[in-house]
Image (cartoon, rainbow, N blue to C red; front, side):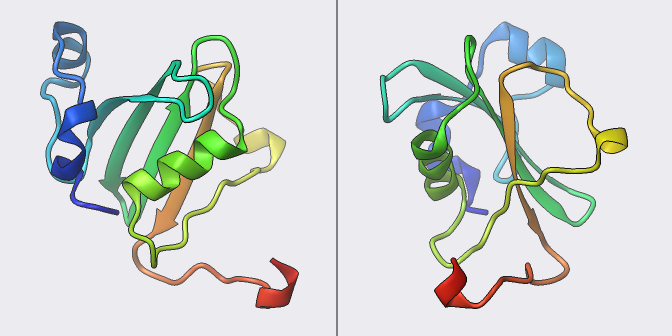
Length: 120
C-alpha cells in the first residue's frame, strides 16, 4: 500500500472520524473521501494495515462501487506493482456493516496466487 500521507488531500479529519476512530489515521490507516471517476459522487474509503493484511473498504451512499471506481481506488491506494484482490467468501463468513460496500485486500506475508497471465 502507498504511504497514505500521499492521499491526505482526501483524508477525513472531521469530528465524526475523530469520535469513531480516535484519530485521523497515519501513513497506513485512515478514512478518506474520494470523488468517483464516474460521476464525481463521493466514495468513503477506509484503509488499514493490520494482522498481516492491507485493506480498503469502498462505499457509496446509494449503490455499490462499480469496476471503474474500484480500479480507481486500487490505483490510488496501492502501488502499481502490487496486486490487490476482492474476495467472495463463504456465506457463513459474510459480514455486512454497510449495504453498498466492497473491499480490496492484499496479504503482507505471502504473494497472491494468480492464474496464468493469458487467463487474466
